[in-house]
Image (tube, rainbow, N blue to C red; front, side, top):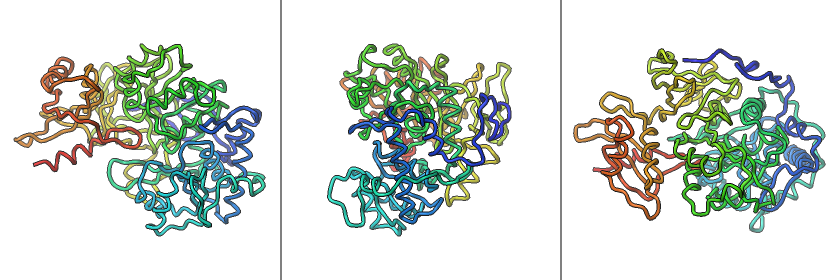
Length: 542
């Protein structure tokens, strides 16, 4: 099934939004949005605040410095930094100069960075001092093209080939005007984490972030200049980049940046205004993080926080977590789904309109289609619902390509449609409910079983903190469900108890035939459960 058709210039169902002009530079656009707010804090990190006026000056200086290195238009600049005020300065500075910042995950290995240096052919690297050893190790083991390494907040004396970020920023005069880029010119890269194989360099245009800010940040979330935004998802993630950079800059909001891991304690510290003296009004998180916070004995009281809007993405939000959060804070968690390929959220619940257990409704401007194994749209039932299908999206923020990967590009980007790799069902009210990754769906006794549905039921048990479900073969070679369960501290539960719990709440065939209790689940840096690692683990057992 699908909604009405759309084109990149006039997204379907979208409010009247003027498309970018023939000349469009994302960095210049975001700076112009804040030309009357020079004194207002744009970003607040652990060391201080950066005003909108300072942001513009430093962005233009970074652009001039990169130009002075001889880096040309559309050449890549690797950005390997913890979230701090230097991150948006570096990202926007490269964009302003017409170069292509490649924002990479700060939690990876030197081998990963070696691959990315070679794959992107980066001409310079902007790196946090704490991450410099990993970068140096990567450079020693790669055939890279890096001319200069610029180090933000060094923690040790620098090599003569390295330059300190502050010195780099202060040396040149600000670049007088931005590169004359267009909306369809390559803007920046993000590497998609992928479940297997090397990460894919996902190329986004200058206009893509404009559309996500207009269609979701403004039109759905209703962000305003008065907001203070805080994202647990880091800036190098597509979700975090919108949350903490393009969305707040498009409306003149202030953003809190956090270099450390988003533990419950670190998150609460900022919710309570203990960094920079400001309390966030908007928080962006992920289901795993919300589960950890709700289980923490340090969970703040409702009256101690200023939250008006809470967003979740990364994986589907179990209804029980959303309902518990709402009961405690009086604020709904607005769950949505986005992807690196679509840059941000295209299917979402709404503030004031949340159906827990679902991912909500299509974001105006995006077209959704569920397709069966035959590649055709899944037919609708009389009540408007439909059976599980592969989720395809059409919208103006779709990536241009995977760099240097023609086969994956053609597999994912199909004639204006982007294949998500997720399975969904459509509900009678037009909302959509997640059914698992396409490669995670299980067929038990000839019937599809969603791992997520079983997981979401297991975590409703008072003893269960997290759960992951995969398919395993029984003695007859038939697929059966197996659950890996993490229990809450100090609480006990047995296999029979959990099986009975699921049977009471789902169709009997959906209960997990096997349950294994584990201390933790394998996850990506974004907190997504890596079921493929559990499958690999099972395949090696005798």
